Amino acid sequence: LGVVESDRIVTVPTGNALIDKHMGGTPEKVRGKVREAQGGVLMIDEAYTITQELGPNAGSNVGAYGKQAVDTLMEFMSPPQLVMIFAGYEEEMNDFMRTNAGLARRIPNIFRFEDYTIDQL
Image (cartoon, rainbow, N blue to C red; front, side, top):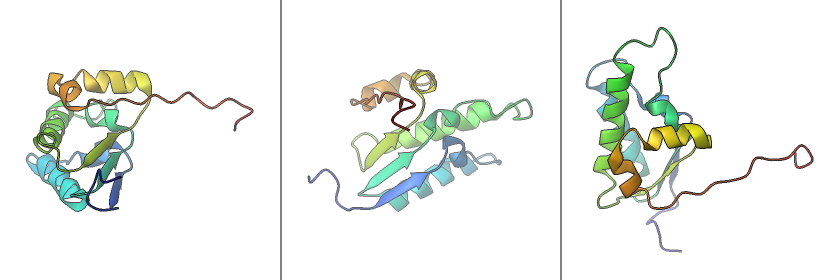
């Protein structure tokens, strides 16, 4: 279709996999995944976990590191340098999209899929 330069697809199994434990590590982790996917597709499953608290012992920096991750991803969205797919449950993804007003402006296409029925499973 000519949308991307290559057939490379890089998947991140969960958004919080982009969050580093150390100050300054999160932007480098994000940039590394973006470089790996350059010219192709970066697919982040459970993307909402980038900005979600990870439990009672997550620490106060989770929000700051999640913001760093989103800000770093947005660096590569204007102009787009690859296709980014953010996947996750609808309600949680709506919350994720509200964490930064620039996300909604930079993500023009949202696809919603119905849940499978018991018969389909």
